[in-house]
Amino acid sequence: MKLGLLNTPIVTEAGIYNLKDITLEEATEIIMNRQFFSQKVGQECLVFKLNGRPEEDKILNSHDLKAIGYKFQLLTRKA
Image (cartoon, rainbow, N blue to C red; front, side, top):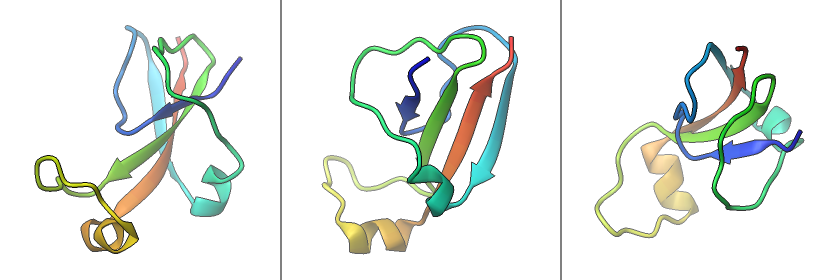
């Protein structure tokens, strides 16, 4: 199964999920392209979640990302 890549821990289908924080090193071991996505049972998604909300229409650079803060998470659909 392909890995999903999400910019928020959104639930794309009804089910039971597990969400856990992971390190940057763990996140760099996982990758994918942008397309319509519906998470299947047993499928994992790498989540890149901002800790705050940027200004509307602002393109963030690495300095902005560090200022807002972010974390990586792994979202797994269990059922």
